[in-house]
Image (tube, rainbow, N blue to C red):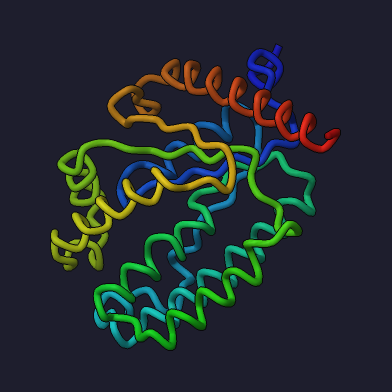
Length: 227
């Protein structure tokens, strides 16, 4: 019996991994993909034409970066559901507007006109009954010190040059965002409770929780479609 059957995880499930920078989204994406034999959908950092420019000048490039992310994530979400599911997705489309665009607007690095343009476009594309939402969003969380340590350990130059205050601001905004998120079911996992890099068996309790959450979610959807 494979892991999908053992934990009752449907073969067409779409699971999105969310959390602040450095929390281990890519690691969890790969671990779940291997365990469930699902495809992966990763954020394309290397081919992003705005990312380096953005880190050097937030105010000049924040709007361009958010529009680029919105377009790329929308296309990726469409592709995932055209495949018929069976995907683990690294980072959600919801974080872009709920955290990044709002943060830059409130901190003055995105103009009100640009912010309104972006949010209107996001709502028209994503916040509709026709947009395919994931079966489950897994939110990875941990202490700020642990997450900052991970950012420093992976050594990306543009991240090393970013002030610690920026990461702390993002950390706090993520915590507030997830407390108010309701677009799909959420499973919160603390990064201190597993170590999929050094202990492969630590993914088993995660799979059990995923199966339970998705089964309950689909039962709820079915009952509401019938009423």
